[in-house]
Every structure is written in C-alpha cells, then in structure tokens.
Length: 187
Image (cartoon, rainbow, N blue to C red; front, side):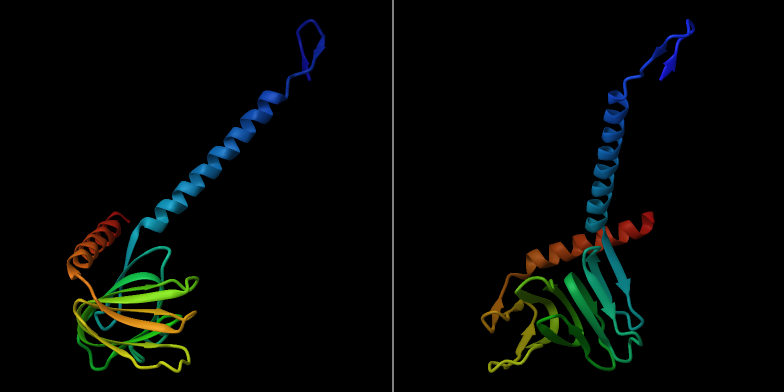
C-alpha cells in the first residue's frame, strides 16, 4: 500500500515486482548454466610424480592411485589424452571395461565414459596392451602400437583392434594440450 500526500491509500501493483523477480531468477539460472557449460569445456592438465601427463575436460575424472606411483595406476572415466614417460614399471590405466598396460614412452587417448556401453583406446605412439576388465570367454588382449586402436563393447562381448590415421589425433592432442596450458596460465 502507498499513502499519497492527500492521505488516500492506493494499492501498489505487485505484478511488475513479480515479473522482475522471475526475470532475475531466470537470468541467474541462465548464467549458472552457461558458467557450468563453459567450465566443462575448459581443458585441464594433471602432472603426476613420475612425469605422466593427463589432459582432459572438467567432465572427465582422472584419478591416480592414492599412493601413486606405487602402484603406478590411474582410473579414467571420460575422455583423456595421456603422455607417459618410460618408467621403472608399466602404467596401468583402468576404466569400467578396459585394463590398459602402458609400457615405455607412450601417447594415447582413452575414451571411456562409465555410462556408455563401449570404450576405446587410440595409441599415438608407444606400446599399450588392452584387455577386458570383466570376465569373458573371449579374453585375448590386443597389443597396440602407434596408429592402432582397440574398441570394446560389453553388451555384445566384443573387442576389436583396428588401424587408424594418427594425424587427426595428433592435431587434437596438440590443441588440447595448448588449451590446457593456456587455461592454467589464466588461473
């Protein structure tokens, strides 16, 4: 209610205030959504004690063992590019469907989202043994080197090794690494 100088009470319209409040809430919700969407696309870099580097987006989880590098093991849920130096022992990469054993200096991309039925590993350089992490009557591991990939699908219990052109992966990884390092400098 609003009292005018002549003493008359006049009802103040509330509709414009409610409309403004709704607009402010919608704007705040849109800003929060855009911030979260942008944060998910910002590349990140994780450097481990043995020199292993992981490059990934915020929507990916890369978790080294609690006492890394003993054991020299990481778990991945998402899409990550790894640069692995030669070490005293192999690096074990675990996903929901794969166990990857990386020996010697290697570079590889792991696409392994826990909510999807399939996963894959693409080797840019080095040597990776890929085997299923689940019991299977077809348990022969794939031995991969540069330009080779392995895909697994648990639903149909299939694991397949293929060759691929490494040039697109090389460009993608270089862009991801450059973006991750640029993002780290601005933080």
